[in-house]
Image (cartoon, rainbow, N blue to C red; front, side):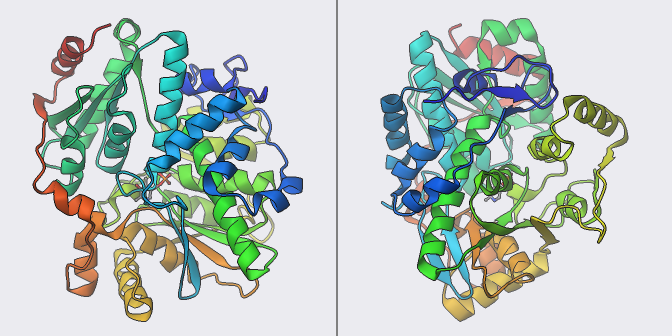
Amino acid sequence: MTTMSYISTRGGSAPMGFQQAVMTGLAEDGGLLVPCSLPDVRDRLEVWRSLAYPDLAYEVLRLFTDLPDADLRALVDRSYRVFRVPEVVPVVPVGKVHVVELFHGPTLAFKDIALQFLSNCFEYILERENGELNILGATSGDTGSAAIHGVRGRERIRIFIMHPKGRVSPLQERQMTSVLDDNVFNLAVEGTFDDCQSIMKSLFEDVPFKQTHSLGAINSVNWARVLAQIVYFFYAGLRVLEQTGASRVRFSVPTGNFGDILAGYYAARMGLPVGKLILATNENDILTRFFTTGVYAKGTVVPTISPSMDIQVASNFERYLFDRVGRNPEVLRAMMADFKISGRLSVPVGEGGEVDPLFFAGTGTTRDTLDTIRHTYRESGYLLDPHTAVGVSVASRCFRDDEPMLCLATAHPAKFNQAIEDALGEDLAHHPILDQLKEAETRCDCLPADVDAVRAYVQEHCTP
Ligand SMILES: *Cc1c(COP(=O)(O)O)cnc(C)c1O
C-alpha cells in the first residue's frame, strides 16, 4: 500500500488516492488523472526478473494503489486466474521478433488484462462502500465484450453496452450477446457507433440522472486500465533481457487510443531499459503524424482491417502531453481548449526534427498488414492478427542488432479471421471459444437511436 496520489492533467481537482481515482474515471475538470510522480524501480529489476506474472503484477501495482497488501494480492490473483495459460502473457520467438501474447483472456484480446483488473477493483470498492454501479458504454467491438466479460455475474454492478445494430462484426456481436448473466444488458441501437456515443454522452451530462442511477464508465481513460498494462511491459521486457543478455529492448505497439503504448512509456520512465517504443498505426495515423512532425491534427476516420485502431483523437494522449509541457496544467489546458476549436495542436521539435527520441512512429497500410501476415506465416508458421501485424510491419523498419524487438500481440488471429483469409487465401484462424459461439444462445434488446429510449431502458432495468 502506498500514499500515491493522483492529480488532473488540467489542474482542477484536489489530489486523490487510487480508489477514488478508479471511481472517478475522467476528472471533473475534463482532464485525465495521473500519478503525481512515478516511482524509480531500477534497483528492483534484478528481483523482478524471476517473478511469475501475478507476483510481478502485485509488486508493480502496489506502488500505485491504496489497497491493503493482502486485498491487492487477492484482487490480482482473481484477475489473472481467469487467463487460459499459466504464464498469463507468454513471450514467443517468431523470426526476428519476440511476440508478447496478450490475448489469452476471456475475450481473446489484450483489453481483458486491464478490464479484469478494473472490474475487480470496482467490485472491491463497491463492497466496502456498500454501493452499486451501473456501467453505461458504447462499443464498436472489442471494448464492449471485454467489459461485459469483466463484470458479468457481479452483484453490485450492472452493465449496459450499446452497439450499432448490424454494424459490428458478427463474431464480436456474439461475444457480447452470448453473455446471459442477469446483470448484462446488450443494446442494439438502430444507428451508427457515433449515435451510440452521443447517446452515452448525453446521459452522462444529465447530472441528476447520472447521480440517481450511479452511472459509471469503463472507458480507456480510467487510470486502472493504464496501470494494469504497465505490468506486462516489465514482465516481457525483463524476460527477454534475461534470455538474450541484451542491455535494452524495443517494444512495438499497435496503437489506437494511446493507452497501451502510454503504459510502455511509463514503464520506461520508471526505469525499464527501453531503447525505443515503436508506435504503429494503420491508415488512421494521427499519432504517427504527431511523432514525426510535432503536429497533432484531426483527420477523418477510415475503416480498416484493424478496426480497433480506427480512431482519430486518441483519448489517452493527453497524459503524454501533460509530461511534454513540463506537467504544467495551465499550458495544457490552453492547448486542449485550442485543440477543441481548431482540431490542431503542436509541440516544439528538437534540432534534427525529432519529436521524442524514445519513440519511432510509422504506419502499416492494409497492404503492409496483409503482406506481414503472409510472410510471417510462410516463414515461421505463426498467425498474426491484423492489429499485431501492423506492429510487426512497422517494427521491421527499425531493427537493431543489440536491442531485441518485442511485438505486442493484441488479439488472437481467430477474432479477425477474415483478414487472415484475405492474406492467405484460406480460413486458417480458429479458436474453440469462438467456434462454439455459433451455437450459443444470445440475448439482446433492440432500441431506436434515441436518448429518451435508452434513458427509459436503463431506468427500468436498474434499481437505484
Ligand atoms: C484496443 C485495441 C488496440 C489499440 O490499443 P490502444 O490502447 O487504444 O492504443 C489494438 N489492438 C486491439 C486488438 C485492440 O483491441
